[in-house]
Length: 496
Image (cartoon, rainbow, N blue to C red; front, side, top):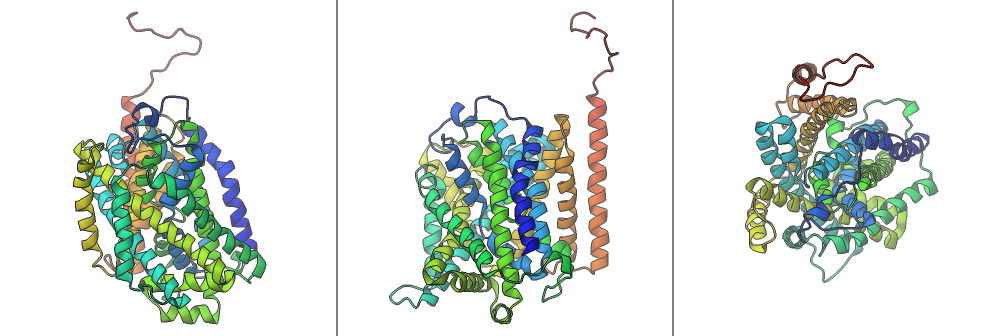
């Protein structure tokens, strides 16, 4: 438990210490926000800070900090380090700057922001990439809760209740469709606080049981040997599997929604950085529970007997039922179900906003919202035909790759603003190495030998770094501030 407790303390301290560094680097001020200036009653709506935080947390806390953290636990206690340091130095930074840059650009989507700093070509790439990812997110986050609901009813021995995944999948997607095109304060703004209570109860319940049972968790001092049953390498596999619990490109598509509803830039740290820290804590709790579970005979047997979406649903249900009892387990699973549902609906909503941005379609008329929403859900239905386990791997890689694009756009922004760009450059380089190596080594990628994959991933990362440094030199040369001798008067325009 010592390693877990230290990481938990670091996450909490990270919000107050490094979160303040990030905030000071950006420099929020008292300028008028898009929520006040535009306020269209649909997507630009004024919301209080507490509600912004809850909605942002539920927007980003999908299956990743639960299912992803559980999958990451297969590699052993090293998962604690990635969740902790990834959240503080990568995920929180990524979420804060993507939200605040949207705030400074009239609530623009991440694809439009990327175009400002990475050029027109990357803007179009990001438009396509982010919409495809969001449709995948909405689909994955519909299948996951549907499977959990079915598992919940079956284990409860319910009679007279439909327990087919297809039925509940249709129910979830119907809700998604409604939430995608109506005003953000009509459903999302009203029911999310209730979902947040369920999510927080789930996390607090599992955390309490960790203290109560005080299980013998593997410690980092015991070593960080790879314990994955299939022998998958820690790098890059673990860093892709644990997406939303450390850093997630999906979050950059969600932050602009809250940027359109904030009345003060000073809400940025609690809303964006704070929500990411909270999600990291949820992921750490589930990683600890799963680490203990996978080191028991029952857990090993249960994991081996299940697969795909059923794998995660069965394990979540087993942990919550054993530790919290029937009623507590029911409430905890409802929290687990709420997390992906409240990310899936906003995933489709974000996709609608991105499409509307680049097509310049006014979203106040409901027919124009429907014109975009219907094709998105048709595409989601097509993606549903892919096996969940395969779909999750592609989603995870696309998710982290979007984070790479976003981090590089943020780094260019900080260079142009003459600010501390190292805070985004370092995670940008690390995630570039992760994603490029993954596509070389993974079975769903090129499936190359490990050593060759590592070499190619390293070469790709160095190449990207070289391109960045070359651009930086040229940019600084073009925009150099002429040297002025200290004490000499400034040269004013018109005195030439």
